[in-house]
Image (cartoon, rainbow, N blue to C red):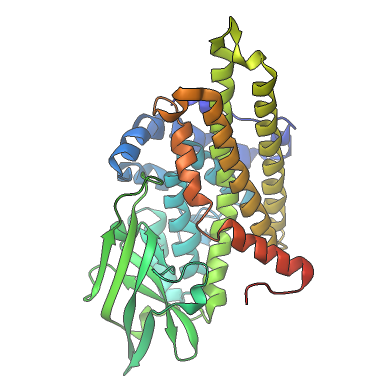
Length: 390
């Protein structure tokens, strides 16, 4: 994958609406991706490994916890954070996923629901990339319905005993700590479970055809004993976990634009250079139709993200609005990847071009942090006032 495929796509001159700081943040991350990520990402995808060697540089750029204030975090605004996610996913969804889980799930959970002692202990080291976090909510039999989780935390004197299994956990087996959600007598609570706790183990899940440059794991908790100080004191009920998911979904909406943009740029370049019947295939109507469709949907997704960022900066963003963007942008990015693969023909399935890798990755992005159908029901409930979940 060449660096030129990371070039921007700005049909409506949206760059003019960004602040100087936002553009500088985006450009710095793009340079990092061009210099450090592109030369290694295909190798890691093929080997099913995550490029941990990139973590110090990511931390130096302020990527981890970028939108959080204090505790060694960069304190960027929501649009700058979104642009970071966009540029990371322009290289690979696994890279954005690593940063998203670290920032919007693990760090945000501590930031929003942790004690002051927990924040001071964990967040600065997580911002430096010295501690890696994961987020244990999904279970083998409970994905779209996390409220039915079977993991339990029972009182044991002044502390707790946790038992259960979490699955499809990004960063799980490389994490130094896990934010684990469990049922307690009064509902659902969050806990910080550090690596090395007796009874706590993480096992990498193998055999993935998607998100191969990302570590996905199963967490097993067998009589894991925790003190009261390891509980997130302000996380009361499932609403706290869902608030973390909303942060992640916001970043995903931006990230999907990056993946779609790379696929579009690749397809456009290929169509202009690939000749069939004595002319570039870009000169044929059916190919132009595909390219125009891709351009249109990316531009609309960019507008969605920009408006979401503005609302988030103003403290007005609603979870349902994030669902709208996550649902739309990921679905359109996946469709764009498929159209790009079609334009590339047989070359669309080889790793000389990044399209098939993005297409495979987006199959996962379309599923996690709320499937397309779940976000449809969230929006349906919001606009009708009727709940179709039950």
